[in-house]
Image 1 (tube, rainbow, N blue to C red):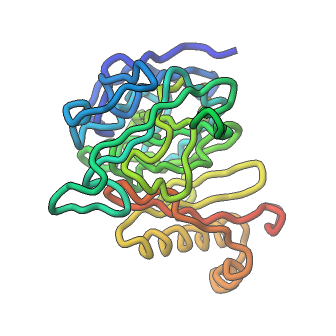
Image 2 (image 1 turned 120 degrees about the vertical axis):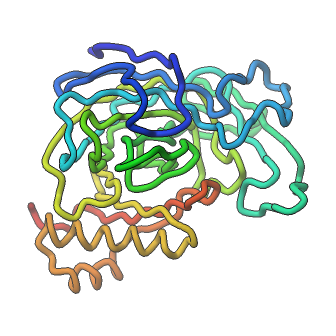
Length: 305
């Protein structure tokens, strides 16, 4: 059974160590976190409701719940967040927003104008239309800790996590972060009921309110842990965030070489060549200030640690 429930409360638009903690959680408990819709105070109330410019104030999107103090967390540790369940509720939406997406007409801000599609998400189904039903695959878009210095907006990402928009941050998987601040300062938000690879349009996922069940672990950080990592029952995954896109890809592959060498004792040159045969890699989003790329390796190819 879950312990405390951390309500949305005073939502944050940056991940920073300057905010007061809203709760404290230990590594021996399961807890719940409420998250808000990505456009914050404006909620979708009907299927035919149309968004207008005043409903979205960039860069104040993706409000996050937090920060949550992780009892005992200190710099040099690694925080492991186990995602037990991502629940979604209310109406969801996706939208085209001029200036955001993979085809931005950034001078005139014209494109297709503001368009949104509102959907019902019920019993694991996204009701795109009367004839098209999509399987819901809930995930956490924003998750991370306070960076080493200053604050990073919740629309952005980095070595601390943040707006990663990775579909593997979902039920039954673990996401790992280097800790830079005492107490870690964990934030969560921007839940999606469904997201395609590259999240190509401006608000490209099915944005929706969320209710998370999580548990935490602490351990000494691997020497080469720089960026967040993920683990699923079948894969290990590394992350890179950058512009241009090929730099994000290189970071993700570099991080995987580090992990294979340090944890699985595969020498770096061999690991690099092995990735040429078994890597599963893709861009998960291209709409944030920095793109996200993931490199995955199937555990069946790995030696026992």
